[in-house]
Length: 146
View 1 (tube, rainbow, N blue to C red):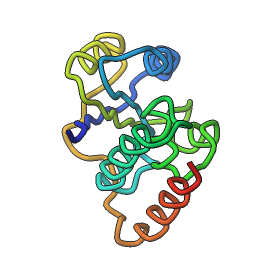
View 2 (cartoon, helix red, strand yellow; view 1 turned 45 degrees about the horizontal axis):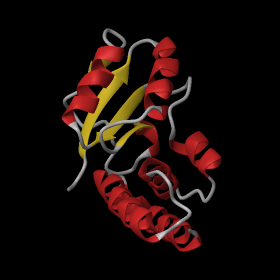
View 3 (spheres, rainbow, N blue to C red; view 1 turned 135 degrees about the horizontal axis):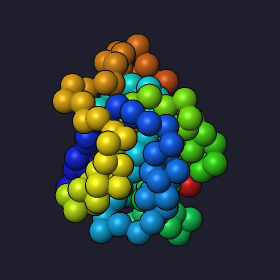
């Protein structure tokens, strides 16, 4: 099953602690929020998700799909560096939420009511033609290291 993606503009930065708390909690299925400015294409998200699910099944090192997803998405071999590279921070202006379960996204939107604005347009710049080789080479290196 492919993940669903929803885009938001962050209206109030004080919502970040609520978002981080929500990300750390248990969910019905996969749920991740990433800084939209750190993603080059939707293909990057989809491939990172598929590879993270596969790693969870075949690697004893991976405990949460979300951790592997963020590491693959950013090309960072350490989760702390991956969080710095692609996670949300005080400089984040727009986020991409990647999820499977509709109940999780509704709970997330309720938690951040009034602090997020749904954006119907894709804020991800389609610069994939210029960056594909860099992004996917880094992703493959992470996958091989796990």
